[in-house]
Image (cartoon, rainbow over all chains, first blue to last red; front, side, top):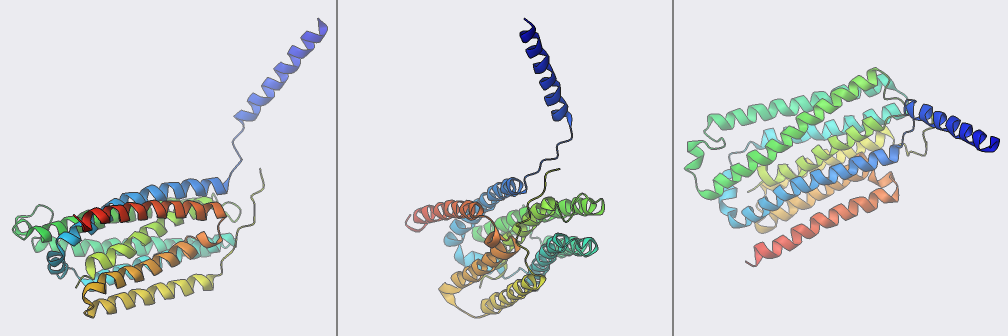
Length: 222
Length: 96
């Protein structure tokens, strides 16, 4: 009888211990799993854009002449400038992670701020590019565009939807990077725990990766 | 607090700058080549350069090259899926 009572008391103690442990702030972290989750998410993004690229391929085969004519109106200088902005932002992003890995907080912050700066520069160029198009009557659903041949309408339909979706990713990416900046300033991202910054970096590089294909497919058709 | 594993491969600042320089040069190249009349192969040249650029970004900036093998497997499965979707669809589009 005493034995059973003792047993019950022991079990109760164990139970309280476990509950106390669970109530503790969770300190265990798994950087590898965290990064794995990010990559899985990036693959869904890849398939999202992949579907649009697939549609582009089919339409380009069907309307290759119209695509060439329509692409003449895109500004190659602005497109190239934006490509360079994004590539450089990818460099500063990678360097920002390299800096925090070495414990250089100020350098990391400086590089992250310049990454956000390049993202904004990209959006400013995009703004001027699109407003110029709108002034020339090339806008989704605009009458002037609708009077053009089918292939040209489709070209601009794809242009606005694909670069538009990409631009949305740039905006979301820039917002994520602002959060990372706050984390860095508050020492939530440190030399010993920088997986947040790394994952944000992966997202940012994906945005760059998609633009690497968008640029030649829309701007450089002759 | 659990100790964070530190087998992470540190890449030099210089390596990143070198990759960036290659990316910029390839961009200049693809714009220059676009001005040349390459007829049918123009698209393939542009896509080939884009493929090299994305390989550099994935291997170094996204450091797949230095990650565990499982990440490489992940990536190839995703790439193979995307590639098979493209190849199968193109059969339909080309031979319709």
